[in-house]
Image (cartoon, rainbow, N blue to C red; front, side):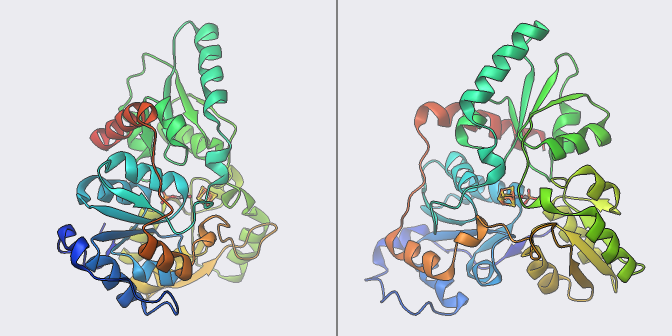
Amino acid sequence: MTPTTNPEPASVAAADDAGPAPALEPVPEPEDVRRFATERGILVLAHSYQEGFLQECAHFVGDSLELARKAAEADAEAICFCGVHFMAETAKLLSPEAEVFVPDLDAGCSLADSCRAEDLAAYQAHLERKLGVRPTTVAYVNCSAAVKALSDVICTSGNARRIVEALPDDRPILFVPDRHLGGWLQEVTGRELILWNGACSVHELFSVDTLKELQAAHPGAITISHPECPKPVRDASDHVLGTAGMLALVKETRGATFIVGTEGNMLYRFRKEAPWNEYVAAPGASCACNLCPFMQLNTPEKLWRALHERAPRVDVPEELAAPARRALERMLELS
Ligand code: 13P
Ligand code: SF4
């Protein structure tokens, strides 16, 4: 599938010739924000869960896998990453020469936070003692660089099934940190996985009852949900797909109504790139909007400031970077 692509910096070498930064306020139109970045050799990447304005500012919008690939191949001098912290870390790991910075350093991820590296190391040691063999650790990309460094291979929602299917069956597999995505992987691959007990606070709150009410109100609608959703929501869906898979499906479908079980900003991309369908956002049990509070910390003002200051920076200590990069590169080879 083709991710959203806006013209990229023609040459990163232009960075020093760009002249003094203009006044910070007000934030100009997205094309002008992008031009400002381009002139300074900054590649702006945005995840599809970012608000529409930020998506429009970006040179490239994608899912976790597309953004990782883009960071690896970009050869950029600087990357401003509109997403959450683990995504910027991934970009830094795959593009180590680039300065990587973000609009808001506090934009974390509840799922990544549910797996601390020291807890994972202790659990791996426990499993090795108990099973007599060290399990293969597969980490969903939504985790810290320290957790990636303890893992054998990384996966995203877009390639998780392929990665698990590609692993030899001579060793048990420990899957971290999302128990819902892991549960779904067990169902679709038939492989037995040892699951870490983590979850995304946004996707976990989708309610199957409200989903069924929406389905009754929209007969004939196609329900799509993210594999980070709990099993009852997945089971009530027509398709379980990562964000890139969802986008591909809506683009190839005409005149349908989709009930969407993922972060609310995804609908911005759907409406922009497949306006011939109707989209209804599935609300969560306690939040009517299903916006990720971490993604929402990034704002146009913070992006504009970050582009001027080339900060706050995201760096990964070298002792973590080498093993984490190996696990990411193994993912890119396998997918
Ligand atoms: P994908 O883009 O991999 O589907 O990511 C979902 C997500 O929750 C990212 O935080
Ligand atoms: Fe993390 Fe969930 Fe937000 Fe994705 S949607 S960044 S998994 S909290």
